[in-house]
Length: 464
Image (tube, rainbow, N blue to C red; front, side, top):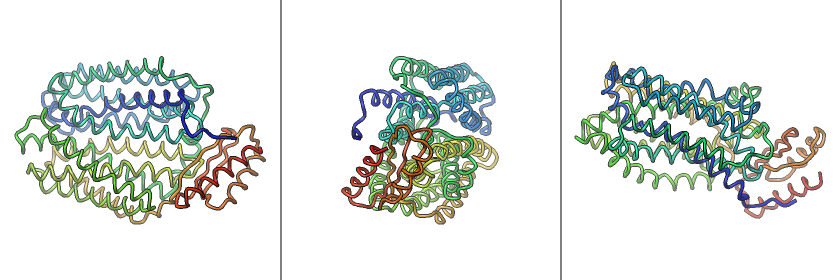
């Protein structure tokens, strides 16, 4: 049995098309971040920062509530149908927000946007559309769109605001969502078969197992804290930049672009070092420490332009590191048979952080001033840093998946035992119903040793 090292044209088309859908949806969420707090001042009731925070974070709450139901519905009614429904809801939310002349209407629109919670369904469709040996690569491609979209939004948001305004951005995201529905219809191939995938979807019966895993809980608390700080920051920083620099909000991209670029370039060596040398834990702890420092720097220097710029640099350096390492750590530490559930819980923690962080940021800013927001964030980071020190060193592994035809329970057990005995294999899961073998291979072995393990696994599969 031979495994192709390259994706087929159909797999590439599916991955690229679905990545574009994911990016378009996230773009609609992120574009308003750098300019909304200032725009809200023009809305009825928008002078209250608590309401501004609620508008920024409302979509996170509805995502928390509806991500799992959408995923379950897609298993029953079909991926594409549920994506159409979710994207239509997103369009309605965007239109409501675009037409809103008061903050309450915009809050309702943002909540409806989040109710179109199709991210998990998109990942499930990716799993349907790719072979096991290429699925991790496809999911990484789509996951990577989040960071890129966030960075693009910080630059594009102010520029678009200058030409079409925030209401125009909401209209634009509605149009892009309609376009995305067309991409699903005409560019994403219909999968040959559609079924539940443990590596890509949340299994309700495994949620308790994942929640009891203390190592994953540390990472989930980190995801919550990271995204809470992200949203709290955007209640305050637009005002701080405007007040300390004299620039209007349409020019803030002149600050974000160089800071993002330099921080991204400086982040790359740390990521490479952590992965290649099995030093992810010290890199991770270092990034959390930098994030704590950035929050304290914000708190002390929020009324100084260069203080804000310096804090933004350290913030984005840490944010980029953490956004890149958290998914990798989840993948390494989650039980092989529960990876999809672990990712689902992790994403829920992110969404909850978005909501609570935005609301807390708005309330604290309104009640106690700008610095209090970053003191709150610093406290979160301090708890995260303490938690990170207690984290087990993540195993240096790579995950390989294989399709296995016609497996019954007994054959699955025999195959699992045989693969577990191979030197260099760290964990094995055989999912008979999904006809899938998942193997975590020690990544610190030589390339030749890893290749030999994979060849032996292929021989075992071929003999079944």
